[in-house]
Length: 324
Image 1: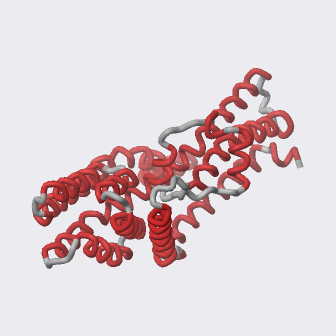
Image 2: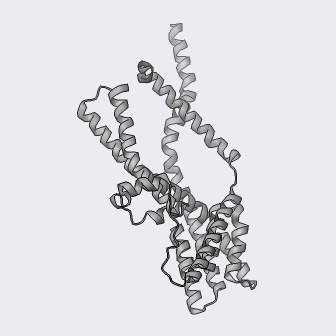
Image 3: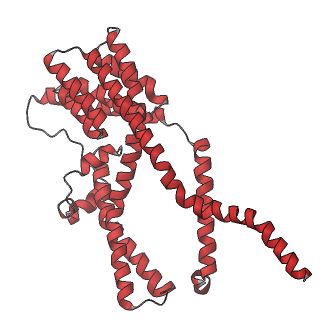
């Protein structure tokens, strides 16, 4: 078994199999993807009910000082509290990062700290087991120790990388549909609807284009209803999305709320700016495409092109040489 696992041909075959499987999954995932819009909106509705319950409890207590915050009683929370991981691995922006990735509440925070503590040791143990037991690749002891330290460092940053990637994908989905959502909101506001009704209407209509944006707008509607200041709800939307276009829209809405300026004109200008941002991002990707295609073309196209062009000439030269 060890000889089979350390055989380079076996490792290369396993790598090719993984690449083929990943390619098949990538091509088939759009057909097998399930639009879980109803479930996400249901979670937002639960969040709305939670805000309503907190508001009622606050009114009942009348400033009595009782805590309205939910406490996570799971295994991750117990480990984090016993080892004081929130103080040892303190990250003041962890709540905002998790919110940008779509994870809200105290439980994702405990899960993040738990895996940030466990993953370095897991990566280091797996790497050390492979280097010292399975295959050492002829490396010296200090080289193996250095590789184990690199695995330890990679395990420490792995949760952050995962959260950053999830937040980036979520932000791209929101930004892609945000200009159209602003246009719909502009139509609703100019037709005489209030801003809360307009946001709720747009949130229910934009779900087919971006489930994440529909979730954020539904959550914004709930926070506008139950937070003490409307400004906090708008700032929460900007903080969860972390995009300059959405942040500018939030600033315009806050100013319109504060100074009584027409909201329709601000939404029209913001919709145009966000559409220009989306167009510039698409142009940037299109401009970077030739540079990204250079290496694949050199590796995959040029060898085939040389074979097609020079193959007949080489065969003819070989026939001439045999004739002599």
